Image (tube, rainbow, N blue to C red; front, side, top):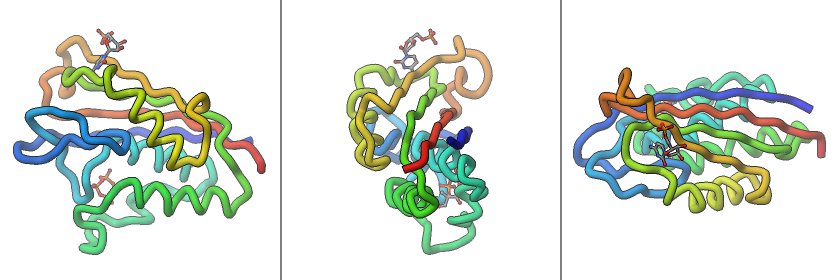
Length: 157
Ligand SMILES: Nc1ccn([C@@H]2O[C@H](COP(=O)(O)O)[C@@H](O)[C@H]2O)c(=O)n1
Ligand SMILES: C[C@@]1(CO)OP(=O)(O)OP(=O)(O)OC[C@H]1O
């Protein structure tokens, strides 16, 4: 068994879609990054890499490399998940938290779970996604950006 944790933050910017957990969430602004800025998939990628001692997303996909400009974070996660599988692991379970004042994530969580289950080749019952505000405190509370956390458990195939 191996355990990993992930944490990521992206800032809001006008004129971008809000992509979280591999789906587009309707909102007046999106997140900015070198890639599509999917804060939740980045967090999951970091947790998976951490669990197998493979560093972090930036080590595999440097944000100075034009090849990853506007990259689809689902593809980055799939690449890293293949590393996990090559090392002989499958998903035990993953628990994620999105930290956002707005928008309301609850209506979109079932679709996120479905997409994450697809990407991690697992059953939806192995994936938990939840959301919290920070009661208007700090950068998420001021709606400057969104953070995400994940804890992953891998088990031997
Ligand atoms: N962006 C968010 C934040 C929260 N939720 C849901 O609302 C519940 C209450 O949030 P508090 O921060 O006031 O505790 C939370 O448990 C989530 O179910 C959400 O959907 N989207
Ligand atoms: C994903 C990468 C690569 O496109 O860029 P960003 O979208 O800026 O994301 P970040 O979470 O800062 O981490 C890793 C990156 O190198």
